Length: 168
Image 1 (cartoon, rainbow, N blue to C red):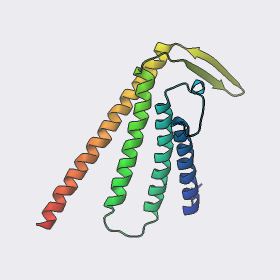
Image 2: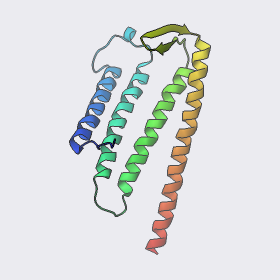
Image 3: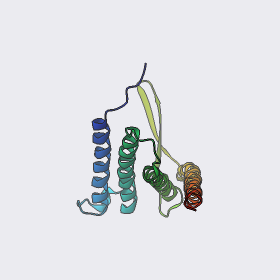
Image 4: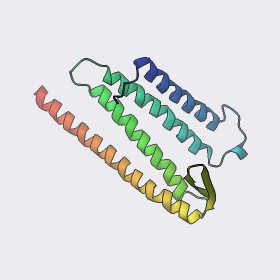
């Protein structure tokens, strides 16, 4: 079964919906859309970061689709830089949320669920266990973010050196 790629219009709609949802969450986090503080289970900045993840995800989808539909074969430095920056920010923001959950101040409440067909069992989980699980993934994301930023910087330095050699 072959997969049919989404049309340009479908990708633009999907990306725009993601951006719109993210902006809505950011507006709530900034209290531009008033919501009581009691309804938050995290600081407002965490909600703002989550909203920014949706915004950047939608932007990345749109950038990627635009690049896929290009017919030019020349260098695509601006597009590559944009994709790198957005992807790097996405990974960094995911890591930021994981780090806050695992290592941030205050109490945390965790729950777990086990699902088999027609049955789901929910139970509360120990705070230490939850923080350790999130901590392991946060540290992995921290490493991934560092690798993405370092490799992008390394690539940019290589590009600049190559450009200087060509211009001599």
